[in-house]
Image (tube, rainbow, N blue to C red; front, top):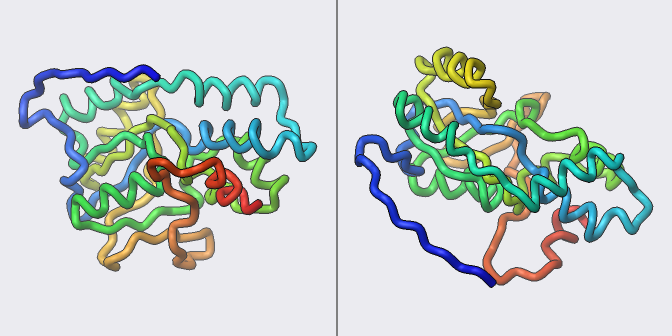
Length: 213
């Protein structure tokens, strides 16, 4: 086991905090969600059941788990250009991150099911298991993407900046006034956020709970 601690300095007005989500904000995320948890469930639980992804898909999800890439460029842009109100890394999975940001900001979110950036590998895995890909994608996945909120009036500029820098971001939801975090499906039905959140000292059984086995 290797452990390390890093110290640094940051100007207070440039710091991205997870507690500053505002009414009217849009909820956004970088990259894809769920690739690392797809890798874990696939290689540890599902491949032995007879389901196989292509070699390219296997390498893609495995690399996402073994070599996560911190979104430093994206974070610097959000900070330097003062685009984001709140921001947090998605290292405990998207569901857990939304709940943490919600609690600290004292705001709740609506997540649009059809806007979540889920990879084809995750969808194929979910199809084999006859389960919702969102159940897998937003569970305890060490995505290391950034979840952030932006004011609606900064949406156009934020999208333009990310496109210019060839970086991926997706608007996946918004702050709501319901007092609870919900998932809005394609038919505008409100549901609780599915999935299994990461907890310290949990056993490997959480993978079986994610895939419903």
